[in-house]
Image (tube, rainbow, N blue to C red; front, side, top):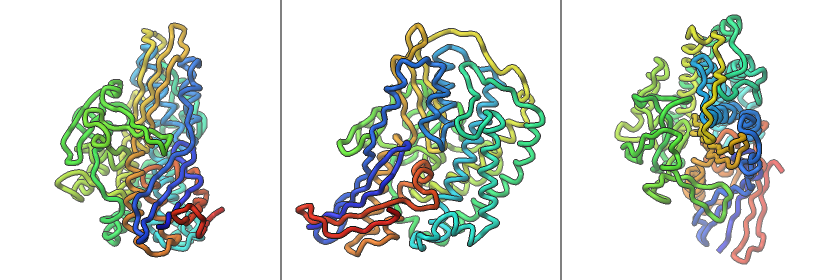
Length: 476
C-alpha cells in the first residue's frame, strides 16, 4: 500500500497555515483526505487584560481581508458590555460600512480569485490561470471587477479614514458623521456597481449551465445551514436573529445571537487546531452545518431588495425541494449577496438619518459582558467579551466563519479527492480542484496565498513504510 500526502503550504484560515493529506489504498483509491489547520491561534488569550473599548481597534488585526467585520462585531460586543446602544444614525453608518466590506470582499473573491478556475478552467495552464490570464482574456471585465472592489473600499475609506483597519466604530456609536458630498459621491457609484454584478451573475449562471457535470459531482453533500435573518426570514447581514435549518430545510432554531452558547458547541480533532462547531442538541457530527453565502441563501426565504430578490428565486429553483447542496454554488450565492449589499447601500445612503450628527450614545449601563454578532462575508461571526468592574477583559471568545465551516471544508476536500482521484497519476489540475474545494468557502485563504492565483504546494508519495517514493511540487 502507498500513502500519498498532499501538503498545501501555506493554506490559511485565519491568516494561518494548514495542509491537506490524502491517503490512498493499494488500488490507488482515496481512503480519506484531511484538512489540517496546524497553526495555533491564541488571539483570544492575549486580549485578556485589555480594556473592552480597545477591541474594535485590536481585533481587526486578526485579518487584513476582513478587518471591517471584526471591527464592527467588536463594537457591537462593546455596546452590549457597556450597556450603550448606538443611536439609529450610527447604526445606519455602521451597516453602510459593512455593506462596503461585503462588496469589496465578494468582488475580490469571485472576480480575482475564483473566476480563473471557472472562466479559464480547472485544468488551464497555471501560468495564466490567474488574474493576469483574465486580463488577457477579457480586459473590460477585469477592469470592471477592479472598480467594483474599489467601490466597496471607497465606502470603507470615506467612513473610517482608510480601507484597511478603519477607525470608526466605538462603544455607543461611531466617531464621525457622513458629509452630504461624500454621500452623493457614493450614490454616484451605485449604478455601475449594480451593472458589474449583474454581468457577474450572468457569467456564473452561464458557466453553471455549461458545466453541469462538475457542479453535480464536486463536493455535493448534505448538512445543516446557519445564518442571520430578518423577523420575516429575509436576508440580513448586520443585525438580526440567527436561524438554523436541517438538511431538509426545516427550521431547527431561531435565536438571538447573544444566546449562541445555548445552541452551539465545539468539537476537537487531534489533527487540527481549528475547532469544529456544531448544533448542540443534535451532537457531533449530526449537528454540523454550513455558513457563508450558500448557508445564508439556504436559510432565508426572501431578499428585500428587488434585483437580488429576483435572483434568489432563481437560486431557490435549483433545488425546489430543499437546500442547495452543491459547493460550487457558493460562487453564485456570493454574487447574489454582493448585489444585495449594493442595493442595500443605496437604501442606507438615501435614508435621511444617514447625515445626522446624532452618532454617539455616551450614557452607560455597564453590564460587564457583551456579545456582538454579524454576518461577515464568509459567514456568521461571534465576538463575546467578559470584563471586570474596571472594564478589563477577563475572557474573550470568538467563533469565526472559517471555524463554522471547518467541517464543511474538510468534507469538501475529502469528497473532491475521492471523486477525482481514482488510481490515475496525480496532476496539477487535481491539485487545483483540491484548492478550489477550500477556496469556495473562504476567500481569506485565497487572498493570503494567491498573489497571482497560485498556491505553493508539495505532493509527497510515500509507501506504507513512510519511505519517499515521489515528490511533485509547484510554486515552491
